[in-house]
Length: 334
Ligand code: TYM
Image (cartoon, rainbow, N blue to C red; front, side):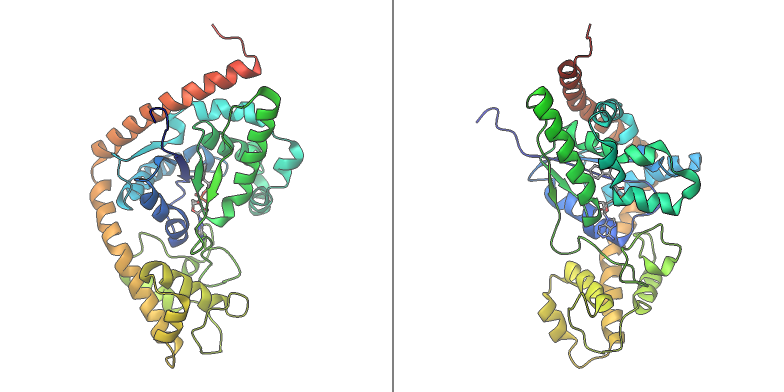
């Protein structure tokens, strides 16, 4: 049918340093897989990064690095629209309207707000509090159907749906209610040193995470040192054996072997053989991405061209939605 459009995807990642293996497995890997099937928009969430203090020159450099990494991970600029959040002002414009439709209580309940406030007690700023309204705007300004993210973003996504629904009830149907695309495998990759916590680049212990930019030896060393248990059997049991189960999840993502097959493969062997295999598998998978990243990052003109083109295309879509919303809420238009 003529006006039957492909379903639309929007997702984003903050440019807060190199991506972790968690970012890749939980999100970016899926972006590449979904881009042919859906109309896809992917962005570097540079405005979100400002909710914690940044060194300006570093933020600038990291934003370009993030774009290069997204491209290296397989996002094809001919298939997907790639842009920086700050290059499409409609996001911040819509976020104000959504802020006025998000309740103080709802925003107060966000666990990320509570965690980050506890981590940075000297900088509990308004942006940190209203962050989910900006994230909702990122999604709703494109009427995205699907949002591929890791598990830690589900609460924010739920808030986006709540606000969209409230707006639709108040002002008539405007926004699509977005669905999360959260894979069963790898939605929450855990820290290598404390498998009760999420793998995160803000962890002060660098052995707790694998970075997309880590070299082969570092990746293998970090896997070898991963905290496990003393049971000695490679068996999937998230509650009793979280360290081993986390490594099995990682191994499963790259080898496509089921948990039973992995258990079978390492039956009768010690953890060290298994950890080495995980390290080598991850290093093998990341190595071509790393080379591609280095190649792309060296070409600033190429990256800037893609981002300029992406911002133009995204702005065209977003501005249409924004003026519809402005009209609905009663802002006087010329
Ligand atoms: P960010 O930058 O913290 O993370 C980017 C993506 O990586 C996923 N992720 C993980 N997945 C599995 N295991 C982990 N250990 C892990 N760590 C991170 C996150 O779930 C996320 O999908 N607020 C977002 C960025 C954002 C956004 C958006 C996302 C801004 N606007 C609109 C979707 C739609 C964030 O800070 O992600």
